[in-house]
Length: 343
Image 1 (cartoon, one colour):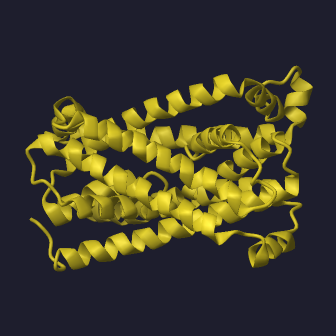
Image 2 (image 1 turned 135 degrees about the vertical axis):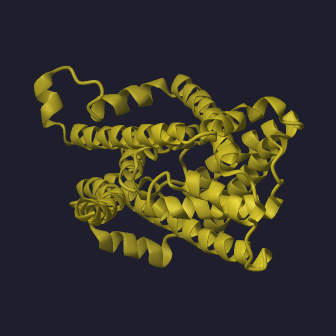
């Protein structure tokens, strides 16, 4: 009995230590990359731009498309949930869950995918494991969309990508140049973060497989895409959602005088770079996203200072939007459900 008690008492601190590391490590990774990118930056310049160098009309339009992208993702998710035979959630609850999931991922990267399934299970009685399967399906579809968009951007702007790879240490002619490139180390730490995230996800998946019946329910959710009743609407939501993601980013170019002349193709290249950068497990891609956007923007003739100002302000505003929407979604879920839960 004493040994068992001792074992339980040790399990508590270890469990909390693991949870703390899952929060702290992404913050440290993002903080390291941000420090490296902005270590010589004049923050007074960013404040001067904030005071009078931003066209907030364009920023408001950008934020509108940011909200619309989440709404379309919520609607698309509900279409994937329809064939599962579980209680069908309200459209608003699906959207609210998406809002909350993005905000939750600011605290712990990628936890939002699980949290939105938990919210629908709590408020609408949707099977958690089945809805988790639909999230896996969604991510497969989104990965294919990302690769398609990246292929288009690469073909149309190939010289820019080759220059970017060369400057970031992906294409280096000598080992000495590789080891002396500061951008290589930023890329290396980012890749290491992705590897750690994948290891965590594999461990989580092995846990689910040990739970009786859960793996089967997850698989049923994954295969739900085959039975989507309104495929054209599902595809329309997917195309509209990705178009909104792009406009959410590209329209911010018109907020600043030094980026307003950049083309839509330049925006597509930076959008692709930023999309891949947010795979790195940091809060809202902080650090790697700045690094990718600044580096690519400089290839189009924007100065280092102006590129850094753009990335700093745009990321901050978009992150603030995620927080506001997360709070709204959480409150609206509670109010619209009358404070109750489905059992």
